[in-house]
Each structure stands twice: as structure tokens, then as C-alpha cells.
Length: 419
Image 1 (cartoon, rainbow, N blue to C red):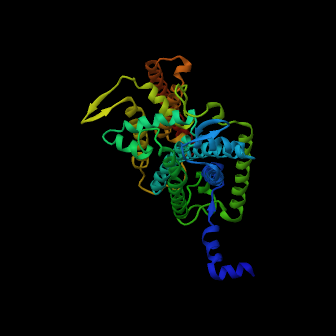
Image 2: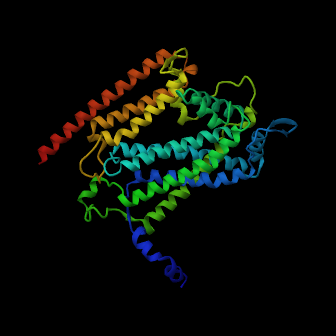
Image 3: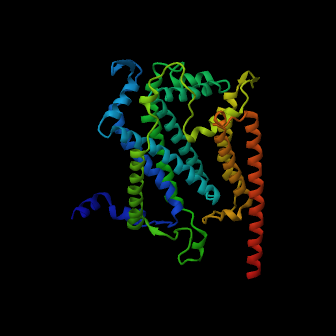
């Protein structure tokens, strides 16, 4: 009776027949996108709780008899609330998992060539989602306003100032003046809780809308199954109720893992670091920013020159040109690796020697630049680390390409013999 009342007004049955009967691939690698989505929902819920008690200001207030910035004091007081520290840790680890899930999801799409026609637009949207998620993590860095967060954010400030021609304008826009300025924390808070989440919601909605329209790519084994792709449907399980139950189970399992991590794995201890003060020790960013940080370490500190009135510094090379070039390469992949006909089935990475080996080599390069972030601990000179990075990357790329090429040839010979 209740369903009929709503159905007469909202046409729920038509919605169910059109959307909830769509097939979803049963391969587990397709769940990485859902992990990112569930992590984002957790971030929103925990962020609302944290926002109720956080004060985005650096005015001096009293905390345990000492005068400290209000942002720092509010973060400490959140940790003292019942379950406050656990919720703040859940927020932190959900952000980590979301970034890792998006990276893994993009890696799956790359290695299976699921970015090809007609899915180029969704590949670009995925890159925007990754960039905005890292932007959310970056803006959230500063909010506790501890020694760690201020020191880490100052690196980004000098990088923004080094942008050719418009660096001064960009740094003033993002940081509300010379960092740290009175308006920096309020501006980062506004970006973190309003602007970036709104963009993420819009991009996630657009990503899902295009996905529903174009449908997933399918495992190649489905070609032989009854009801294989005919341009209108794919082989899999319906969204409701089978896939919905799987997704719900995954959501609860993910929540269990995050709560477990939040209970036993601590964050950066802001109480130990204390509020900002002179003489802060060297601190490294979280893992997802380490490749950029490590690449900055490899650029000679005295390297500086001018092009067309723009001063190029180590910060420009390592913090602007390097990530910018990396983003352009990733965005160009679907247009460089083109096909004439729509690709509806995923390809075996072992049968794509060049693209797969390039992906493996690129991954090794990022691993080496991440390792470069610890050259002071490893006692390796920047020049030596740069040489190691180049030769290890090239060796991994060439070896993987030759092995994949050999495997691909042997596979073709085997198929020819069977035929």
C-alpha cells in the first residue's frame, strides 16, 4: 500500500526497471571504485562531526594554561571528546583509503585498456577525482595547525609561489597572503569543507551517470557466455538485489577495517608536535605526496634560470612542472592509445607489452622518487639517487617489455598450433 502510494507519485517501478536491473560485472577488481565512494561517504559523515567542534582561526586562546592558536586548541579538544580521537582517526584513514582506492582503480583501468573509446571522458573525470581528493587531503593538512601541518603546508606555499608568471597571485589567492596569514586557516577550511566536496560530489555523479550510460567493460571470458555484449546489455548480476547486497557487505567490512585502524594506529600526534614554533624539525608529507617531495630532493638546490621573464627554481621544476607533466601524460593516454571500434571487453595486460611495460616502468619511477624522500635517512647524495632512479626505471621498463613481448609471442604460437 505504501509502495503503491509512492509509486503513483514517483514512478518507482519505472525507476527500478530502468536502473536497478542493470548488470554489474562480478569480477572483484571492479569494487575499487565502490571502496573510494564508501570512503568519501565516511569522510563526509565524520567531517560533519569534526566541523561542529573545530574553530578555523589562529587567534590566541588558552589551552591548559598556555596561549595557542584556536585551530590547534580545538583539534586538541576534539581528541578529548568521547570517541573524538577515534572519529578524527577514522576521517584520516578514510582519506588514505580513498586515495589508494582511486589510484588502484585507475591502475586497473590503465592496465586493462578500459580507457579506450568510448570511455575517454570518464578516464579524464577519474583523473579530476584523484586531483580533487588529493586537494582535499592537502587542505585538511593545515587545519590542526600543529608544527607538522604548518611545516608541511609551507612547502606547498613556496611551490605555489614558484609558478611561472602567476605564482605570486596564486599563492595569495590560496593562502590569503604571505603564509602563514590570519586568513589562511579560514580559507583552507572553506575549501576543505565546501568547495572541494561540492566538486567531488558533482564529479562522482557525472562519473556514475556516464558509467550507467556506457556500461562497464567486461572480462574477455564473457564473450563466450550466453547473452554476451550486444550493444545494449552486458553479462553480470543485477544491481538490485544481488550487487546491492555485495556492496552493502563491502561497505560494512570497510567500515570495520577503518574503525580497527583508527583504534590501534595513531595519527600524527598533534599534542606531541605542539603548536607552530621556530626550529621545527624536518617532516615528510604523507605517502601520496612523497613522489613530489622526493623529486624535489633530486633537483639541485642552486638550479635557477629565467625564461621569458619567468624565474625557474627547483620548486618550479619539482613541484609544478613534474606533477603537471605527469598529469598531462595521464590525460593524453586515451588519445595516444586509440582504437577505431568501441572496446567493450577488458584486455589482458600480458598481451599489451608496450603499454603494460610503460605502466610498470612509470610505477617504478614513482617508487624511486618516493624513496628519494628519505635520502637524508639513507645517506645517499641527491645526484647518486637521481642516477639510481633513472637506471632502475629504465631497467625495469626494458626487462618487463622484453618478457611481455616474449610471453605474447609464445601465446600467439600456442594459439596458432591449437588452431
